[in-house]
Amino acid sequence: MVKMGVRSVCCILLVSLLKSSSAHNDFFTSIGHMTDLLNTEKDLVTSLKDYIKAEESKLEQVKQWAEKLDALTATATQDPEGFLGHPVNAFKLMKRLNTEWGEVEDLVLKDMSDGFISNLTIQRQYFPNNEDQTGAAKALLRLQDTYQLDTQTISSGDLPGVTKGLPFKSTMTVEDCFELGKIAYSDADYYHTELWMAQALKQLDEGEESSVEVVTVLDYLSYSVYQQGELERALDHTKRLLSVDPEHQRALGNLKYFDYQLAKQKEAEKEQSVKEESKKEPEKKAGNGGYLPEKRKYEQLCRGHGVRMSPRRQRRLHCRYYNSNRHPFYIIGPVKQEDEWDRPRIIRYHDIITEKEMEKVKELAKPRLRRATVHDPQTGKLTTAQYRVSKSAWLAAYEHPVVDRINQRIEDITGLDVKTAEELQVANYGVGGQYEPHFDFGRKDEPDAFKELGTGNRIATWLFYMSDVAAGGATVFTEVGAAVKPMKGSAVFWYNLFPSGEGDYSTRHAACPVLLGNKWVSNKWIHERGQEFRRPCGLKEAD
Image 1 (cartoon, one colour):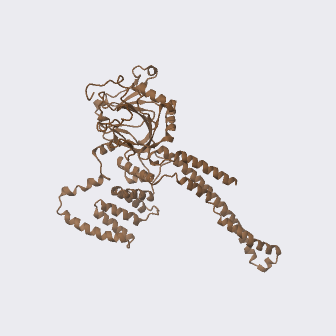
Image 2 (cartoon, rainbow, N blue to C red):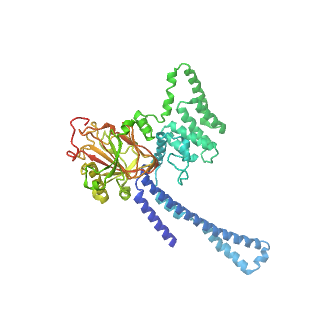
Image 3 (tube, rainbow, N blue to C red):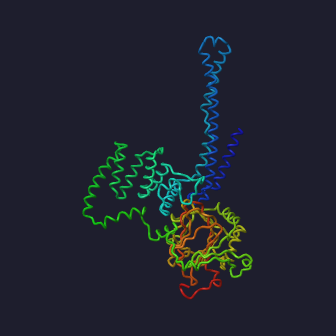
């Protein structure tokens, strides 16, 4: 009864923990929320170990009973009549067969898994779903493309930023690689299907034990290669498949079909120009297709390439102690200000938010984190988007003195009125978390973007970095080639609008996918209303 009571209390505690932390889906969009899943898994392992101990205890009792009877029957069968001639032996035989063997039967039939199964059943409803698994898989594919990583690098866990001896470095099994390939296949992404099926095959060829069969991998591999127009390689994979399983019906059909198509292709090649033939290769390298020039520029900046600023312009960037136009507070303790870029002017403020403040902001935001949304220019409503993978929460000044103090600090340093600004938005990025190129301000073709707020357009952006990121996660400005790396405790600031009120299109920016680490940011979008005398309008459009 005591054990059952303890188990019940544990179940209640686990359920309440899960309800408070895991009631929301889209786990893959926030590392912060995924940490709760680790605690859930740890508790499940503890529950599983308790079940194993119970089973071992049961088996030990059965074993002791068997050993005792083994010795007894060995002696008794040497002289059965003599053994049973002793009245106590005869009585005990009757007792054992009538009573004790029934007890052994009950013990053997006793199900020790009830506690664990009920616990697991309760918790399973809070587990990640197929969408989360698919989202995490696609995040790996996105990281692979953005940072130009080969499958071996990802499978071995040797990602950029991973230091030697890191305790949580993880490798991928054949099953993991195969699963990634299958998810790509389900999206008709044959480029990534080929890459990951080839990696799974490589690890199988190297002798890794797996429940995934070579035949199955080759089946996917040959078809994905065929879909990319490479008939000869598809034929080679099919022949290898048949060497393993000569009766494979689909492969036998494919062999004839590929042979026929290859003969037709060779005949057609004689009549085709070299120019037409060369069109295939760039298509394959593009992977999923749809890579626009801006997309390539964005990925180059994320990799640390393509940043273009002349030495002459670089010499104009400076660091300084800033007192915010002789603000009384900052005359005593000026802030560290650094020029990150000149046009548009992007300024970084170092050590501008304390560790305690950052932890309090995260603590307030974490229970309210929801999948981040974007404005749909067609409907004017907020919606989730595949190009923004994070969770966010909004904190009002009245909710906690720390939030109020942060807002006041932003106002004091920028000189802008934050009373008409949006609430402090806190964001935590998920697996491969990113936000593709976008503008913070509403364009002319989005006249109703912030109409419901009644405070005008977003004049400026203030962005806090509340964590360091081991690799990836930079904020890049695709129009000008700037890249700003996350630096815990710092903040960057830029104007989205010219003094004339016209949008500055050079502020188009993006959050690069987080390759390694956990990225927390918070931002304040400051609006036009209330800035009339703090930032007077210019007479020219580009002023």
